[in-house]
Length: 151
Image 1 (cartoon, rainbow, N blue to C red):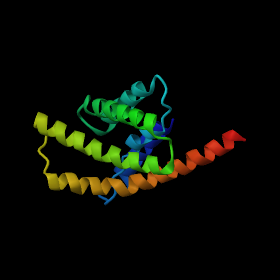
Image 2 (tube, helix red, strand yellow; image 1 turned 60 degrees about the horizontal axis):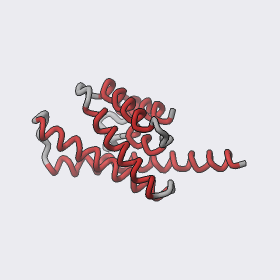
Image 3 (tube, rainbow, N blue to C red; image 1 turned 60 degrees about the vertical axis):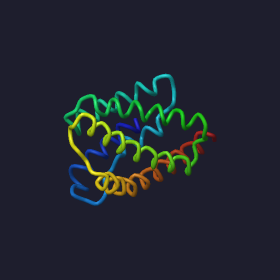
Image 4 (cartoon, rainbow, N blue to C red; image 1 turned 90 degrees about the horizontal axis):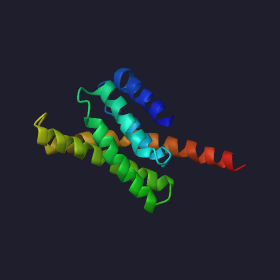
């Protein structure tokens, strides 16, 4: 559910509110942190990647692959670390950096689009701020939710 809401927010922000802005949301990607890590987790990551590809890109298998890889990294990360506000922020920064790095490498290998290193660094900086704010909001929501459920 959180990923579909995040996808909707990505659509609204990218196409209407933040178009041409300094901020670049990757809320759908960040939402992978908050999905339940059950036996269907990687399948959920792939499904979200399919939706992201259909809505935002013309490369149908690009985000399926990237979301699957990043979902596995998230899964491994949280096997070693607890869910805390700090680990979620760290994971958000790791996700954004790896996401852009994977796109950079895939585009370079397939000669789809040659991106400079300066562009890579520039674009990452634009992703960090709004996505860290989103992670903060989600962490607060999940913290409150966990306190209510414990009652």
